[in-house]
Image 1 (cartoon, rainbow, N blue to C red):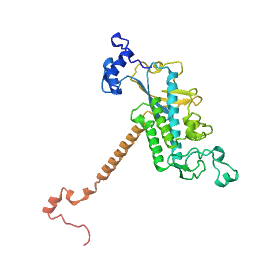
Image 2 (image 1 turned 180 degrees about the vertical axis):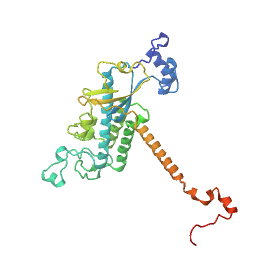
Image 3 (image 1 turned 180 degrees about the horizontal axis):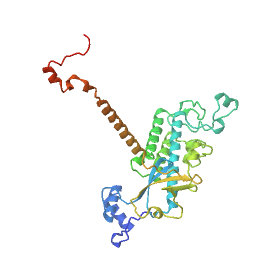
Image 4 (image 1 turned 90 degrees about the vertical axis):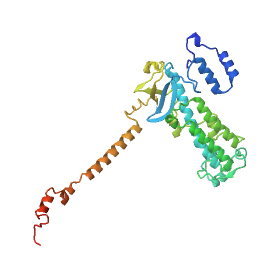
Length: 341
């Protein structure tokens, strides 16, 4: 929890007074931050500048996201928030991988019909009772699913564009490129990615999806990941360990017990499942630094090659390099051949 107001009574402002100021001047977020900064005494550039500890969260050697916290935060609270964000990003990613299939081939067939050919479905007298209930807006377009997982009643191109555009926006919101942009991911951002996805699916399928469809199961937190590769990526709060500098941050302690009281600290922490041992240490140099060093070494080698090529002494055998050429010319000795004519 971040303390916004210092202990000095001169800076203490009640929530009611702050609310009144906010309502008097404007209803915009920027105005609220401006008033808050004027009350607290600080910058008024439209951003709330609070000193926070920034954690660069990794799984193995792969960057995941940035997370802001304070040195006073208990380790168990940090683990809880990090695992929630980490698993939330995985959920968004799973939904984004399923929606293109929904856009191309329609809703998922019942489990007892998946993988069967049309002849087998007829022979077994199986019927998809959800096909007539879950019809996409604007009518379906027949696009057969070659692997027999979906019913082939796909939405039209306009509805497909709605789904795909929303998927791209959700991916960008929780992308790992946010680390390079120095943007910290929060649970609010995860929610902001899930809500448009849910809304887009409701627009295209106003009657909803079948209860066995993985997209609906993800939205309702009923997903069954057992036996899948995705289940290996999930890290529950109970089995999650937080490592920094080759040490496990123990539950029951605070971050300041490990990193001190400096709120402007930036750390690289790694999440690991219990029983998997300590993760590998961070390299002394980053991958980008290593690339730059290799490029400099390559350029240096090319320069040395050019210098070696330019260091040719064959010109020393040329006539114009002879220091005695002028004297030989006056003495008539400049064009003497030693050998038979």
